[in-house]
Image 1 (tube, rainbow, N blue to C red):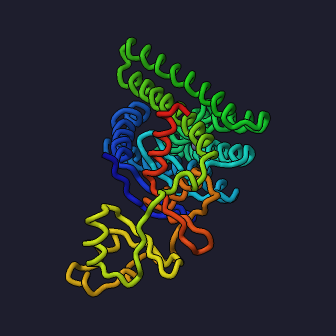
Image 2 (cartoon, protein in one colour):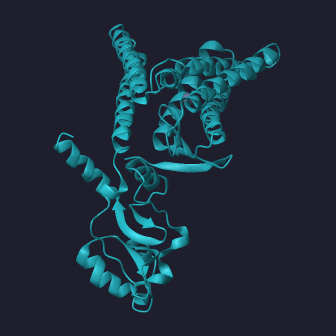
Image 3 (cartoon, helix red, strand yellow):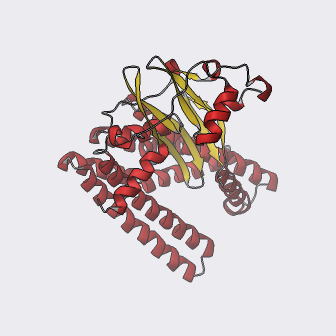
Length: 372
Ligand SMILES: [Zn+2]
């Protein structure tokens, strides 16, 4: 089960925290307060270990956020859309609605994160140097955060996809060969090699008795390996989807309703009979909107008899649509970006079909069953 909370916005980007992040935040604070600071600064009192531990932990996650914001801001400058940044167990991830379409774009976006981490490291190193002779708690915090941000930059620069360094490598190979699939295969190959190395080192550590460290390193390796594999699969799929047109995907038949139909009739005659969740609303051949179960449920049941569909539907002005010539990638990214289950296929304002999330999936299943 995954739960995420929105904690605010920065530069128009939504910042979210995954529940797994709370565990890591607790662990980092605990290990700083109980082990790192007491060992390095035994003269402090216990409350100071905890206070500096907690502040350091918060600043550490703020640094991770800074790294992801750097990726996102460069992406936005390059004309990409960023859905949000999520902090989770392994750090942070910026969600782009679409993958970069040019190698130069990906190169800059990937490099921005580690560069930001280096700048943050330099800032904390400066803080450490400026305060070390007269304010030990702050200098201790600065020293730790300079080291951790420096390591974060170096770790992310490892040239294995999907780490930032791997994305840089992919962009370079992509730029030279103009073949994204080949570039991804090479970069995720390096990523898998790095992942296996991590797992190997983790096992060595465990057998040497360093349980926690070893398991953690192996765990990161396992995560990297999965990410490298699925990153490559995604590119292969996107390549495949490029040849699939909306025309191939759209359902052959769909049921449209008129704007004056009441909600009660819609439920009785359409929703319960056909078990579809959403219906296009059409009048005189023109698409007026879409009505879905969600809209119906927002109206109290006793008003269903008297409420026409046109009153609660999503109107044309706010609809997201595709046209017959679009490819399946466009369909998937629009479904995802707007978090909807279906898109009307239109020619101008004339409805020519509906394409559902499940249409894309069943089409892909069919193709793979046929071995195509
Ligand atoms: Zn990064």
